[in-house]
Amino acid sequence: MQRSSEENHPEDTCSGQSGWLTAARSEAASALHLVVVWSRHEAERVAEVCAVTRAALLGRGSEIEAGDPPKLELVRQRPSGNEGSGALRSPKLSRRQWLIEPKGEHTLFVRNVGQRALLHNGRACSECHAEPGDTLSTDGVLTCLVERRPKVLAGPARADFPFGAADADGIVGESPAAWLLRAVLHEVSASNAHVLILGESGAGKELCANAIHRRAGRDSVLIARNAATIPGSLVEAELFGTAANFPNPGTPARKGLVGAAHGGTLFLDEIAELAERQQANLLRVLDAGEYQRLGEDAQRKSCFRLLAATNLAPDSLKHDFLARFAERVALPGLNQRRADIPLLIRHLLPQVGLSEQALHPNLIDALLRHRYTHHFRELDRLLRLARRTSAADRLELTAEVEAELDLPLPTQAPTAQEIRKALSAGGSLTETAARLGLPSRYALYRLLKKHGIATTEEA
Image 1 (cartoon, one colour):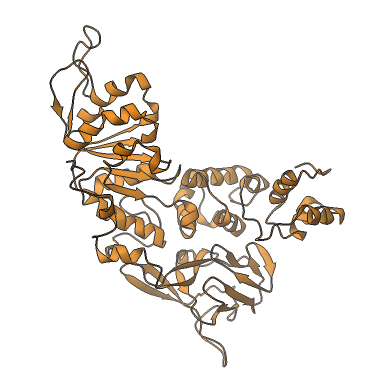
Image 2 (image 1 turned 90 degrees about the vertical axis):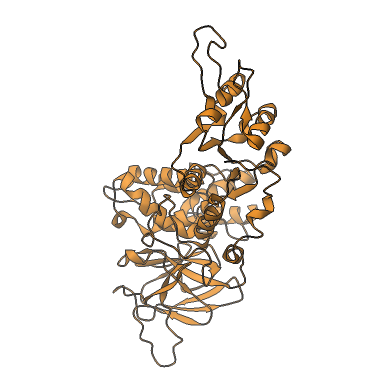
């Protein structure tokens, strides 16, 4: 089931593929969008979007007053096309809530004209300049994420699962990054070449491997092992197996991972943990399927496909071993697909025993702007922490959760002199952080430590 390195080339993953996959990587037809990430009265609107290409008005209903710009209406964006879902209907929104105007390619000017407060990245204001990655909220009613994305998604038109739900592979997401991943998996699964899956810890490499195996349409075995758990002295025995009576009389024969995967797929996670000598021992079996069990002279053959994963750079692998992976799949982390975070939270909520109604918008806002290092696992951990530290039947942005978050600092972080001046004005560290325009007192703690500034208040 493997194909020799002469038959596949890494560039085949991009060039020579269907036109829609090339188009999916293009930003040419992109625009600034508002993505609904939380709605008090219309939870079904989460992940719906509206493009902001000219001055427009966001508010309840589709009616406009004389002299007003057009009203923004939402769509459900999928490769099969944009399905209109109409204007927002929340009774707590004003008919004229925000006036929005694009200012260049990466900025929206937003003025609040409704009754409820406008929050920009969690801070109240009357108007603001919002950029991709920023959040905009009508206090207690609606939260949107600003994102630059294609106006029409490219990819395979087939989408046989409900909007916002997990697909057949367990992948959750309606963002361009999620749909590009599905497109790449569709292409890679049609190949027989060995695959290297690249992604940070918690990005979903095992989920991706299962998807490739399932999509290949083979009713065959999937053998999975974490390469880091194999003792260095036993790697060959674990991979290739051992003959009967080897190394000791009475020892039964063992197939090894390669033999057990015959006719199917072998998934080796943390492949970079294998020593270079052990990577070299896999070259022949990857090329021709030929290997030897320890204690045997005869050659055996296994017809299998190797899916290998690592959270390290590709060049951490031995160069000729790396060359055997004609297909590469790079997984986006949560920092590259923030619009999917509310859908992932919805997917995780049953595991913490709460419904979507328990979510406080401040928590959603903070989790959208947090910089992730362990992605899906980190999001799960933060939700469980919120569950333990929130009031009953609520998920709130508690002090314990806030202390774990890495929220972006302002573009121009305050200097040591500015921090000392703000501290001298008195008040708590929370008040000082707000005075400096910082997202939380924990951001101030980090700056105090960086500049070596001591305070009397405990951090």
